[in-house]
Amino acid sequence: MSSKKEAKALKEELFTKKKNACLVLSDKDIKAADDFCEDYKKFLDDAKTEREAVKTAVLLAKKNGFKEFKFSKKLKPGDKVYTVNRDKAVLLAVIGTDDISEGVRISAAHIDSPRVDLKQNPIYEDGELALFKTHYYGGIKKYQWTTVPLSLHGVVFLKSGKKVEIVVGESEDDPIFCITDLLPHLAQSQMKRTPPELIKGEELNILIGSRPFKDDKESEKVKLNIMKLLNDKYGIEEDDFVSAELEAVPAYKAKDLGFDRSMVGAYGQDDRVCAYTALKAILDIENPKKTAVTVLTDKEETGSDGNTGLNSAYLSYFLSDLAENLGGVPRHVISASECLSADVNAAVDPTFPDVTEAKNASKINYGVVVTKFTGSRGKAGTSDASAEYVFRVRDLLDKNGVVWQTGELGKVDLGGGGTVAQYIANLNIDVIDVGVPILSMHAPFEVASKVDTYMAYRAFKVFFED
Ligand code: MN
Ligand code: MN
Image (cartoon, rainbow, N blue to C red; front, side, top):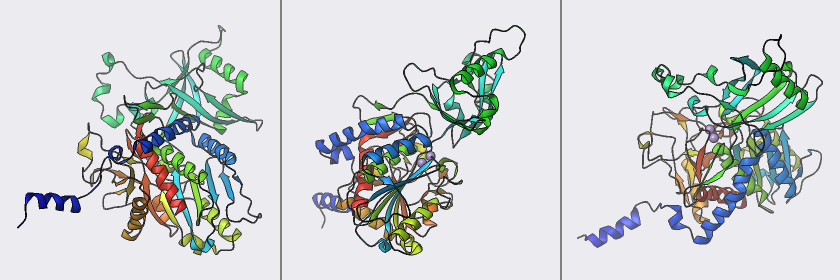
């Protein structure tokens, strides 16, 4: 005979115990999360591009006693080293006390975010306005990038060989830029376009000036005036844009979001929320048992190809270097290693609940998300973590009081996506996606919860310390 009371007790015992982290955590923990996110917001403002993220990471690493890795210099437990790949990716390691043959612990996040890149021959004048032609980077809804204040970041190699670094639009007194859009009054035919074409790729033109150079005879006087300004300030000639990488990103700063200040709203939180937390985790550990590695990679948003993306050999080369330096066999060390692929997942958006399946989607404030697989259709284009490894991570997080939840990238067959996990798995490393749930992913302004962010940091840290 069962009673109502028995059913209640059974339910409590058998059903999921997952709760909103804000109800589980102590006030002290929530305060710690809020405090943690003050520095996180600063990181977001300092590191709006992959190059800036590398610079910022190296600066913080040096402050925390990391030295540049030299293969010829013998490493010992407790040593902290970093190495930079082409200014766009960075690897950090803290040498553990255990034999390197037992493998290393890796946290891998990406520091590139969707944005609008300048074309190789960008500058032109039309209708007595000066503009830049662009080519978008990563998966964006192009219409979202119009009428957003933009700043310009990057490098130009002048014909002399001089490298010029450019950041315009971030200081209070800097000018900013924007991509214009049609007024609703005249958008009748634009609004009949199918949504992906609402703004076309070739319409993502950035407005950069309007005053003509004062000369009656020459044409393209507005372009000439801008070229003169650029030449006076940076020494740039038009052909120098070919050897440049200039990226337009939202010009605004990271801010607290909500009356309760429980969230952070900012550009580029996919995946700098995991980049910062994985970075901070390795900066904060001392004398781990297993050697800890954080890799902050480029090119994830375009599929991880290219020599600064994780589909290249640079991670395995670094792990091999560490192995050889510490007297291990590289392939044995790599095969014995474990990884948390630190990337964001899509949080349930109450305005668009149809794309997620409630029992398996991640939610804001439910802690760090453990995603067994990503990919699309029949689990194509992913590494599907084994039950053994999921247990390993689940157990680790539970034992250390890290609030976590499971997640998936939308309903089955509705879309999908990938992370760097598959490329790490291809090295014969156990890997699973662990990251922060995000609202408005890939938009110029993304939202993350402070407690989830803090739980991601705690997850990476306990993984290193285990
Ligand atoms: Mn990502
Ligand atoms: Mn992404």
